[in-house]
Image (cartoon, rainbow, N blue to C red; front, side, top):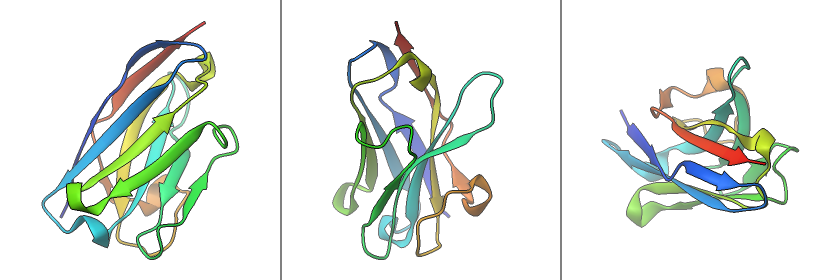
Length: 124
């Protein structure tokens, strides 16, 4: 099974940028479709972005489309989330997740493996 560790969270002003990384270990990274989710206080965990293991295609939640970019580096066993034009409503704990399903998944229940999360705070 794969272990996931996120890094790169922090505090940023609205309009700024932040990059998150998720390092995978314990299994072949290219065997997994990877996703980013986030959870704000008092809210359910929600889908942010995903990248498919089959063809590298990507998909984004409408709320982040055009501002966030997900990418993967098989050589480094790492998936990234570049976040630009950040808004206060992007404030949340961001989680990296992995599934062995071939196609992009939007539901948390489709991902078996999760990282511990990293806090992103956007000040207004």
